[in-house]
Image 1 (cartoon, rainbow, N blue to C red):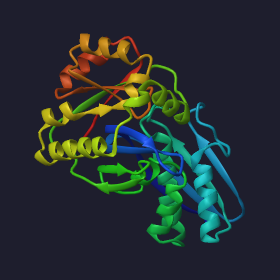
Image 2 (image 1 turned 120 degrees about the vertical axis):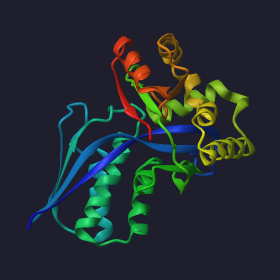
Image 3 (image 1 turned 90 degrees about the vertical axis):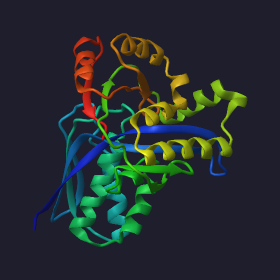
Image 4 (image 1 turned 135 degrees about the vertical axis):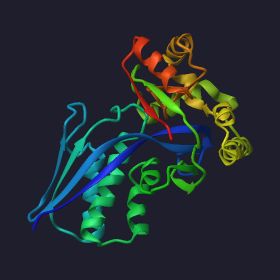
Length: 286
């Protein structure tokens, strides 16, 4: 019997991404506020009789073997659930590949959710446990919430208020993607003695949470921060380009390389989109 489920795997932006020192597990302490954007991949998961995990994608830049997180998600789900079956995961990409917008993590979460919807073999808590072992952003995408605070290494997530009012992002797809490990190492080297304390991480999170609770776009924009901006070589160049086109605030997506220019007016965003010299796309943040 063939069973199929389709999921919309949304991208994200980190409204806040502050990095602290190393934890006992070797990961960095992180304070982040993640917010989904109105841009998504379509993930179709199909179970058939037989065995094997097969990944298909319409973007040639996405690996379709065991390097793909969806492959690992299916492998770990089957092992935990005691299921033996053949699964095909078909991904229609819209989120930029390796751009810092969480596309791979979101596709991975969609695969886990779809598999459990079909099989029903695990509790949500058990499926979430698998997600936490696949990447720090994956747990966020397991929930329906549009905005969540991430603590610990970023994978300990709790819901928070989402942005209210119009806010658009012009996502500039430019620059070379560093591995996450390399991005953290470079950040450590640049910050050195300026590593954020736990107190700073808490204070910055509280400020963003206060702005989200108040629902004021200007306050949220003022509270935006991403520590990785100092290590992204192309950031200042793109920032200057966006500012020259009327953008008041820019933000690096995750650890990069995609850079988001924020606009409260769609016409201003369209103008910048039509004049910027780098590949880009527009989508609504909220």
